Length: 119
Image 1 (cartoon, rainbow, N blue to C red):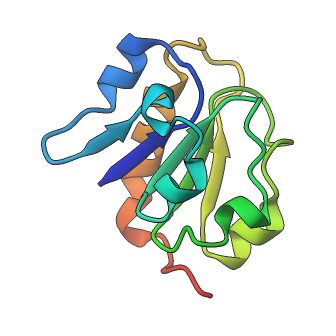
Image 2: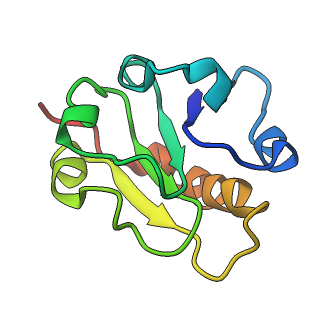
């Protein structure tokens, strides 16, 4: 399982995502290569600065979920995500430092049932 955390989030929250056998890519590791990291990622976590559009998702063939740590999903294009079978969720009304772990807990309950992406 590979989780890409595309924007700065609390290190304690990001550490909650770490499980044996899972790889968590932090914003420092992304270093301008977000699209490349998404080629092999299962999950993407963003806040509000990263714009998730069709171009960014074009080669994200394994991606199953995009989580927005915050209210709304206005920085995520829903149509291309839906076409690829990617679930999109957010964490309205939650404490920001807990948002990544809340998102992942929610996603992990259904991660085996997400539809396979289509081209």
